[in-house]
Length: 357
Image (cartoon, rainbow, N blue to C red; front, top):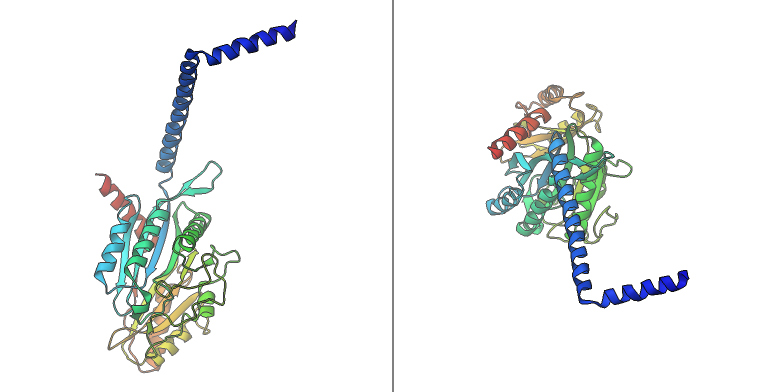
């Protein structure tokens, strides 16, 4: 009996499905499903927007070092790219013509999912479009400057600000590295918190010959390294484009950059002083230094303060002045090349507020 009933139902349903109004029923059902899906998308977008707004206090900072400061057309192209996304702000830039190098300091927020994992930051796309503009406007083979470099985009470092953590900075560093390696076919080496073992930036640079000038004994020009790297990069190919070079990308707590001018053209003496100031040379812990030519009538000690709250600029300045005096040289008052983290956050908030008015 049940078998016959099921057969009748099957025959009836087959008839219904062949009937013209069955198409209307299917179309209406499809429209209902599409409407439901659209509502879900709208709810998701609204939720994401609310989450972004709620997490704007979680900020990340990116310092983007590019090997160019003399070509205004190239810099304009890079800065136009940076302005495409109003949610990322250039809070500072530092240009040095002697070094032929520029550093952009960018800030934006980071969004976390429901379990606290970073999933989005406007910084990612902004950095990538700036990198693309740099590769389109600068050729490393025609570049020359008094500061070491291995690529057009020489270094990208992410710092947590405000309520963000090193985990978010590391996530963003690795995401940007993967994109640069795959999209632009540039070898990328990760360092510090972005590296699986926390490998130090200066260690990688030494392995790659970063600190050895290749022109006139105190300049870095073109690309003179092998086109096939001996070390396998973390992202991108092992083969190097001579026009683009290679890139370092890392994530670390705040690092202060402080330069001390030495009123002498004797770069050998300046390098000796720099070595004695640095931790590597038995000087101040957590301080890294470079002695460089800076213009026609002076040299400079470029200092990286890895823990500026422990060993600050005052101690560096005192040590440099003492060692310079022993060599009969004058050391001028040093200068920071960037704002403090607190000032950067304040400037970001002011610029964001102004853009919304």
